[in-house]
Image: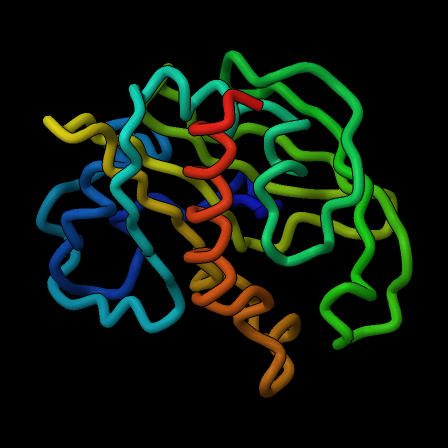
Length: 200
């Protein structure tokens, strides 16, 4: 999937009062947020966030090679929107590549074909990756996708992240979010496993 946190993503201490969810603690430890004040949040219903998991029988490095590559993003996309890519695999925060999109695949908005620039906002080699998207007439508005990889005896637990909680209300017409259904994230993980197994 293609999207990511905006560059001025609020720090965790600026979220609604409550307990910081474990998933966000781990993201903070991976560098997605800085200056975290652990314990600053007490309750977060996370009703504007998906996390789906799949255990893939492969090494984390094999999986990371795919999810950090622009061609890999296209290869595993289950939404049908990602049509092609230009650029090099990500190796650090700030790296960018271009994805050629077709929103017609979702059948929800007549946006046609367009390009987005993917900017990496969180990066830990073989463990963690998040990104934001932008374009000439498509600003980063606060939603993001990412992957977290946790090695286990049977392979790697891959967690797909999708968070639109920081999108301003003006960008949230009723019924428009989430853009990508949870089922599509799960399907993408299935394609990811198939891709890793095939060695593509």
